[in-house]
Image 1 (cartoon, rainbow, N blue to C red):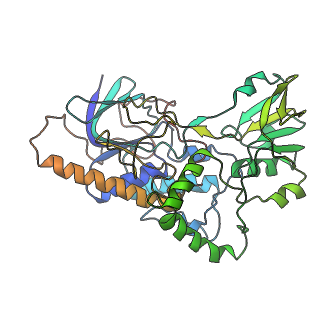
Image 2 (image 1 turned 30 degrees about the horizontal axis):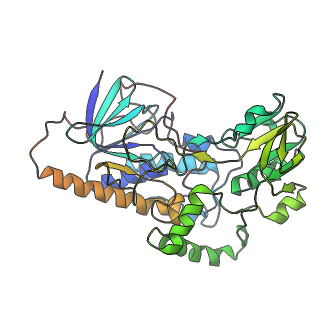
Image 3 (image 1 turned 90 degrees about the vertical axis):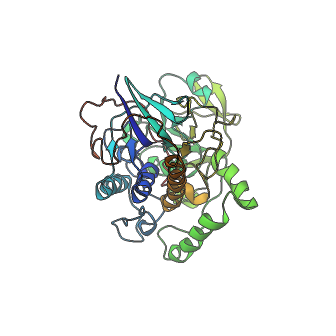
Length: 403
């Protein structure tokens, strides 16, 4: 068993984890970032092929490195992956990839122990940056009763239309990911989209009008819809537990492409086929665009609410000193779930860590093992010599915090 100590361990090398590390680096605090993926940006590479951000490139850069694309273009998923990898190298951030986090535990006397297979890292602070809405795909229990001949995919496993069998497709869930996928599938398959109508964003993303509207939206998302305002708290509850409105694809787009629209939910199964409302729908494929659940069972600390979300404010967990989150939906404001909002949240967490470290430095030494430097560990593409290699473990969720 190998044990190391680092002042701050960041779990997750997505945009939230990298931004937090960059802020800590600027403040002169040592840290290490670990991630289960084999390469920085792999979470984005593993999204469906046609995915693009809903925010223009001019707003998508993390602090210190603009996004290298036309300002009013919308980066694709591979563009985001390449950018995050470039950011890691540009900032020379210490990232250990292919590293599974099995458990986070409190240490007697303070701090935390993080288990990574046979190895353990002790740390004063842990920042959990594993995704916006959760990392466990949610599929309704009725899916198990469907005829085995029906091809079923959760949106997290969907990449392109040729994964599906010939024939009719039912897309379940009509938020932005569901409508985007249904719109794409309608080119090759007869497509039915079911689920409540969540409303739609009124402006076309490819129109010149968006250049006037978007700055106003960003101001509202950052400064009006926050956890400090009544309207922000109301929107927070909806954002965390219900689907967002249709964004790029509109109702008329679905109609023009021949998508059959049902506003009822899947209520059961009859003769092996899904029942929507009180109607049996004959399909050969089902794509579940039904979201994710927060599952933090690997964090062995009593800091979670009944709904699975941590008890935190702006990422700081008062019930467990030294435990932080970054990248959560509505961590502080609506913009927290978007690339343009990550930098502010990461800076807040980093400053809290720095203040805590300064207070601890005024106390006698605790006798921790020798701390890792912020430059120690592997580079952006691999693990340090002798570290455990693993491809399973902590992964970001389907809807990353930059969408």
